[in-house]
Amino acid sequence: MTDYQYLSTRAVHAGRPAGIRHGPLVTPIVQSTTYLREDVDSPVEHAYSRVSNPTVDALERQLGSLEDAPPAVCFSSGLAAETALFLAILKAGDHVVCGRAIYGGTQRLLEQVLSQFGVEGTFVDSARTEHIERAIRPETKLVFVETPGNPTLALTDIAAVAEVTHHAGAILAVDNTFLTATLQRPLDLGADISVYSTTKITEGHSAALGGALCSRDAELLGKLRFIRKSTGGIQTPFNAWLTLQGVKTLPLRIREQSRTAEALAKLLSKNDHVAYVNYPGLPDFPQADLASRQHDQFHGQVVSFELVGGAEAARHTLRNLRLCSLVEHVGGLETLATHSASMTHADVSPEQRHAVGVTEGLIRISAGLEDVREIADDLEQAIAEAHRGSSDAARRGPWATAV
Picture 1 (cartoon, helix red, strand yellow):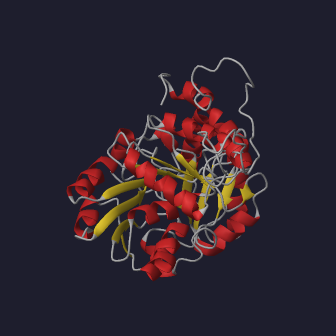
Picture 2 (cartoon, one colour):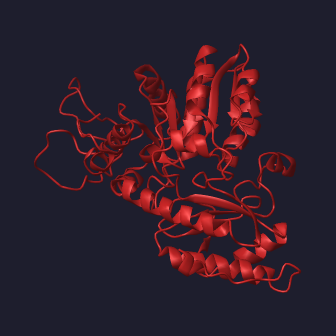
């Protein structure tokens, strides 16, 4: 933790040890697997980089500071972090209540991997707190939700879910990857753990895999570090160093990219070829009131929308993009487009996908740092081209000037 009051200041300074006024300005990469000892009995801060590493430590201090928490526990990927979380909390016979609107890899981990070891998961609509409450059993040890959900951006009321989770004696983990601690603070709202794929918005440059778990529970943090030591999932020094640099600009990036995403959401909602738009910043978003209470001014850089014409229109639109990049990712500096049904959620059955709103015509956009007018022009021309000649005649709208 740190004495700095504002997150922007913490993002820049929190990785460095307090009180250090000499040495390198930029945290160095300690690319070593092992460390010298002065004597057999002498105490050491680091012994082996599978257990701890100075560069990884710096990132952990930085991320923990953003949450007003002790140093985070960093992993090689977001899924490695989730795996460690499940192994630290669950054993054979235990039960997890999990929100349906989650990353496809999380669902795969629970249903196809952990189920082999006697861990059972129940997936519910976490936007309805009563659904979580009804799904909790005596053997439930963990409630895991993602908010905003991927890719529909459905929200979960963290404070309300924390109340029912703790009443049942379970632990609440919140995947906060899409908003980060700069826009949403799960631990302040009652969650026990914040979960991150730092690969995405936290690092922000599409250059470094990583995951992190943040908590204010020292005992739980100790369990997580033991699991990481035992399974070898620590983040590499170089990826930790890249993430350290990315976090320094995180508050600036996410605010600017959120502004762009909201502008795109408003424009998309006026397009004749768009059936609906998912974005918490829109006045007609079904959970707009919760968004205004739970988010800090902005609502993130991710927006998704359903095209008239379904799968065919979506595929044609994505093929016609010129500026936006078709990738399975969010959070980069560039504007990124994803067809969730065939990419992030390809391993999820069509029935399960449709139940949570991941339809064949849904496109997810991660707004980048390009000029919003050029992003808007690219989306407009791609959508228009996809619908050209259809009964719903293509119509070019004044998007750039509207922005």
